[in-house]
Length: 140
Image 1 (tube, helix red, strand yellow):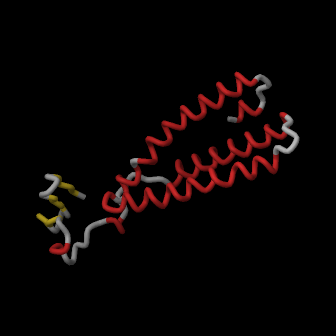
Image 2: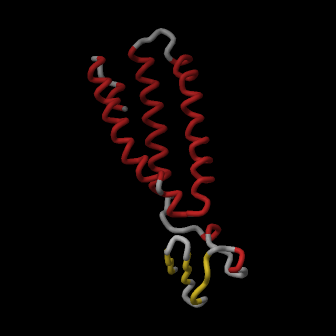
Image 3: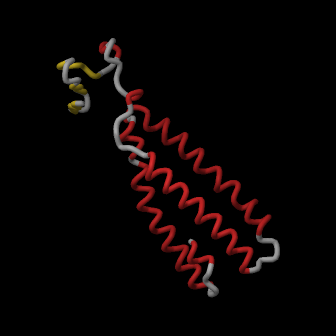
């Protein structure tokens, strides 16, 4: 998107935006499954929260763009593209630094009362979980 800020022809800008949105598919495929990795039983709640937060810029950005681009000059559009690029870059850096695919401790089954969960503990020393419904075994 930063490249699109400096393009002068409309077809080049459309091409840059198409490539940027297309490459966004890589980001989507990475973070969308991350909810399942870190907390499988809470993935739907986490996805709902993250989608709500991710929707806010889409609702706010047209108003900000309208405020910035009043005369519709290339310089004003350049500001919009630079702001968008910065938001994408900062988001990618934060995700790259802080994201993890490790299951979170708060998402683990309750070891003190295994009867309240469909998972059964086979061996308490190794913390092996068996979900007979899904035919899945998970060892920590």
